[in-house]
Image (tube, rainbow, N blue to C red; front, side):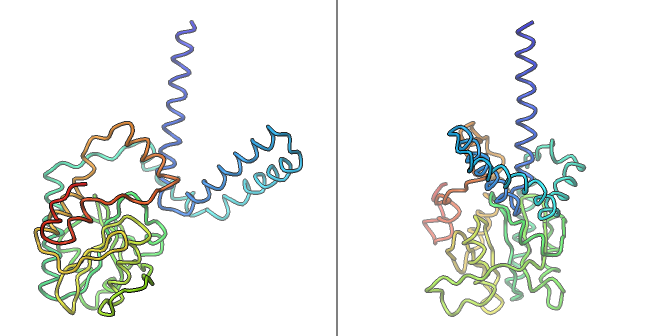
Length: 292
C-alpha cells in the first residue's frame, strides 16, 4: 500500500512540475518573467521574515503580496491572455518536434536565396534569428506573420515600398514570427560612422539578447552579422551558410541533464553568454572553423 502511495505521490509531483515548467517556458520573452522573479523574491523574504518572527516585516510583505494578487491580472492581461491561448492550442503540454537535417537544409536554402538576392539587388534588410533570449516585447508591437520561412516571402517583405520593409523581421527555427519590428539602436561609443540606422539597430538588439542578426546593406551590397554587441561585415557565402546551418540544426543535439537544468535556470537568471562558435565564425577566414 505504501509503495502505491509513493508512486502516486511521485507521479503527482512530476505532473505539477512539468506544468509549472511549461508555463515558465511560455512566459519567456515577455514582461511577465521579470514579474515572476520579483514575486519569488518577495515570497522568499516573506518566508524568512515569518521564520525569524519579524512581525512588522511579515505584515508588510503579506499585504504587498495580497495587493499584487489583484494588480497582476490587470497589468499583465495581454501576457495572461496569450498564455491561455497557447494552452488552448496545446502548447502547454506539446514539446516542439526536433527538426530533421532535410528541414534545416531547406530553411538554409531559402534564407541563403533571399539574402543573396537582396544583396545582389542592394535591397536593405534586417533579419533577427531569435535564440534562447525571448524577443516578445518587440514582437508584440510588430506586425504578426507566423509564416513559413520562404525565399519569396522574405524578399517581398523587404521590397521597396512594401509597408513592412523599413522594420526588422524576427524569426525562429520554425517560422517568420513578425515583421516591421522596431529595434533599439545601439549607443555604444566607438561605433563607426559608416553604420546607418539598420546596422545600429542590429547592434542594439544583439546587445540586449543572444540573437543572430543578419544585415543586408543597400549601399555596399554586403551581408553583415551582429551578435553579442559586435558586428562582422562583408561575410562570405560559406560563412553565412555555415552560421544558418548551425542555427537551424542547433536544437537537434541531445541535451544532458546538466544542460537542461542550466536551461531551466536561465528562464530567470540569464548569465552573460559564453563565446560561441557562431561569433568566432564571423571574425574572418580561419576563425570560421572554431567550435562552440
